[in-house]
Image (cartoon, rainbow, N blue to C red; front, side):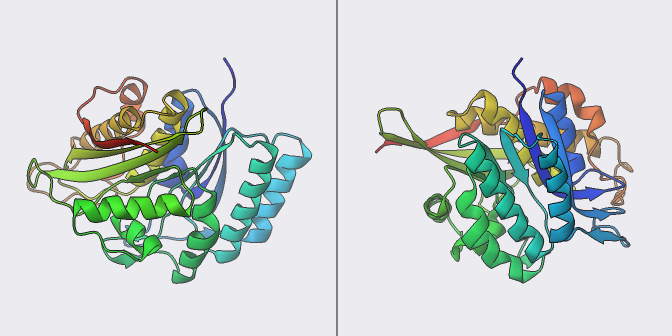
Length: 309
């Protein structure tokens, strides 16, 4: 089997499943060789009452990358990036991506632009212009939530038409595939469902371009999880390898596994009527291994439109 190599640059926690710990395991289960660099190293995610740790600097990132290059093992098929807290670190990530793309024009960069959620940023605000001007233009696949998409485009999403417009604006910035992993839009199936949307633009060998937009109604789970966005981006990377031109299939599988891993987690929490602690709401990744390998589909993506340009 041809080796599929991924460089994943994300956060790391000692306890729990976010960042690299949420992304690396499913990628490995699905047959990918993953080299991981930690943008931060924390005791646990910041949803806990207390956390301690370190933020990797640009200089430290350069040292790690230089060591990889000296051994001539810096050849990748995919790059995956997520949480970062330091501007110079993020700028160095951009330089690395440019270098790796120059060496392999077929390399696919999956960017989860971790900026915030529900109206609040949880990274320094000075990272936003770097994402806008340097990071997003390099991305092939972009997976923001609604709040992050609004920050990147300066547009507010209140309707499905707004969401489509925002995805088109993000396409104009560079990425061929955009998935709004969660929105506040009302599902046609009622309040028990979360709405996600996706858009892909593909250039065919004859030069024509095909675009497809999809809508997903995802059953809600009555809990707040950390790490599901990292998990979704990793699964989307994996299924892009198998179905590069079929966004409906990719998002169906990824959303299904995200939902099933959340359900697996809830089933092991404190019980009815009790509010589970952050520790109890850590994703049950190992217990979900069978679903990574063979997900039973519970989410069906609906094609909103397909057009030829």
